[in-house]
Image (tube, rainbow, N blue to C red; front, top):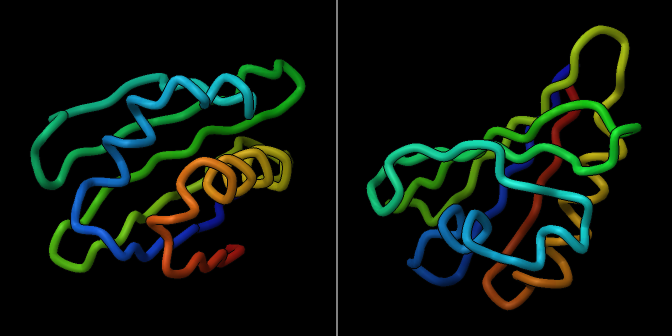
Length: 108
């Protein structure tokens, strides 16, 4: 199952880098699994839940031109994306709120 989260920002700095380098992710049961091309556009990163009962991963990349972070939430089989999506949105609202103009969640 997949969902897409589109986060539009006010500031030009990379939200992807801010998330990937934030130590507060642990508090929201999230951890950076991998990232590629740090400091370059477009770069990408992958988050996993640190809770063993929460399935899935979040793959995201930053588009500097539109100041948009596109995140794909992916789970295997019949697992649904609600728990990892909830942890990610909670993190965004608590830790990155000042940067965010809008969050759109598109279930697939």
